[in-house]
Length: 275
Ligand code: ATP
Image (cartoon, rainbow, N blue to C red; front, top):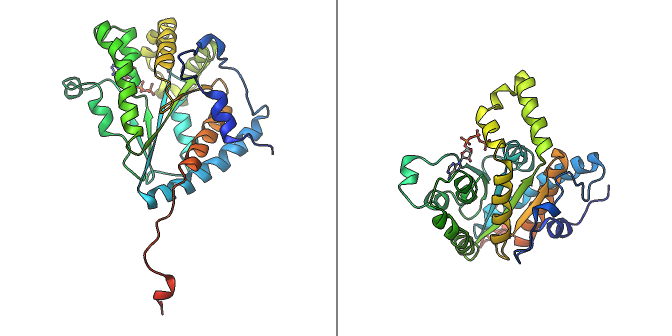
């Protein structure tokens, strides 16, 4: 099987850090690199194993952490990415932090308070299932904070992510980009398939009515917060297997570049005899 270079995938998905990203140029149905779905599935399987191996070294080294931010409209597949890309690594190495509606306690603090607490410690991979970006997405679309406060957040988020990156946390951000038609299909499947009823939330239909406002908010966030230290990657996500395979390639390549090293133990195996 031919497999694309991790660096090529990372470069192809990049939202340029010059503010020039346009959502209209990004096709959610695109199939870059993996024309053949079975190639995508094989690549994903292999990368998930490699990610597990690399996290093991990350844990032994305890010098750096990887933070993977997943954002996307309802049904875009954040859960599917977590399940497939990080399944082999398992709960010992990966910490998933979901971000739902803030509690009263969280609202009594600044919006980054709850975020900083769950940034992965050195040695771990952290996955944000939604993130601080909700504070410039749902909060903006639904006017949950004054417009001037939201406006200041883009720079604040960039400064926060820069702080993390200068303190041993590599930040990777993925926008799971699906089309409006694909979302309709996935929502209908939740209504039609009894095994998916539990996933159906009538609130998702209300959110869908605000599709254009959400897309505009996403475009602004990707223009203003794709930085050299924490770039956004726009992942075509109408095809689930290809979406997972692309993300796995980028995560694997990033971990390889972080190059975690097993520490030298300070003794030699010859020092010990086990009888
Ligand atoms: P998901 O759709 O992510 O699988 P869910 O619909 O089951 O999750 P939760 O995980 O409980 O629900 O919460 C997600 C909801 O919380 C989303 O509607 C999201 O927009 C909202 N949310 C997240 N952060 C904020 C925030 N800072 N302010 C307001 N709402 C937020």
